[in-house]
Length: 300
Image (cartoon, rainbow, N blue to C red; front, side, top):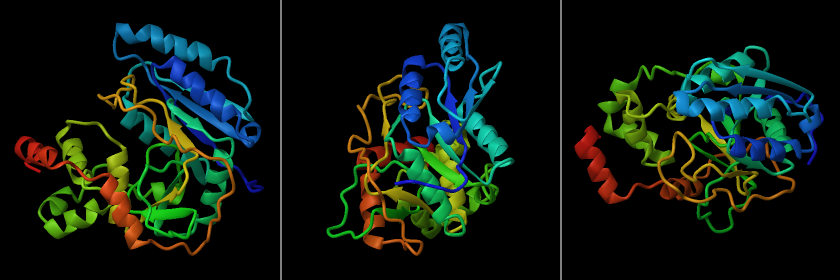
């Protein structure tokens, strides 16, 4: 699968995992479009003295990276955290380019990941009901005889994703409609069609328990009646859920183990499939005991 248009820049966020970062970059370098793609890297600063050496290792490695059309490295003096880094970094790049592809430092990619993402960003640029695209798909149980290579769901992915400047500009990072959502059970139920973990995550973000840009991006898509576009077969594998990351406190192996190469049919008129949305939501269904815990602890 090739792509002959103007290529989206790649934005890569990293912190204190040099080994994961090296795998991510080496995998990305193997993409057929890497030599023609511009790479922007945001290296977050250390939280404390313990992090300083790892951050130094990350930056020493970044100074050796080649294989892209151009490489721009931004090194933060102090720790911003992932949410602020992503919002600031993506916003800056999208102030100069019409679209963007975003990765964190724990993503392996298929060699046609960039081709897939650029094609999707081109085909669906004018669809007002599609706010983001991703190369990752969770291991959902697909409806029998699902006919497409892609699907639409009311949830954004933070793993190997992309968007457009005119859609990112509509994001509500302050979640100004939170109180309305909190007081409207039907509205909350609609928000949770992408997984009943979404509302609890948004509550925790608003209470300052978690620092997530992704739940606010999903909320923004919901407010704009928009979807995330996913492939049936992943072009991305997450290698960071081994307890090494700042946003995971559990070890759960590798995600995206079914990562595949190969062309994908992208019908411009692709529509949401209710059976597919239900199957996707089922994957993110919270266990009953966790729901009770959330209700007691956070009033959710």
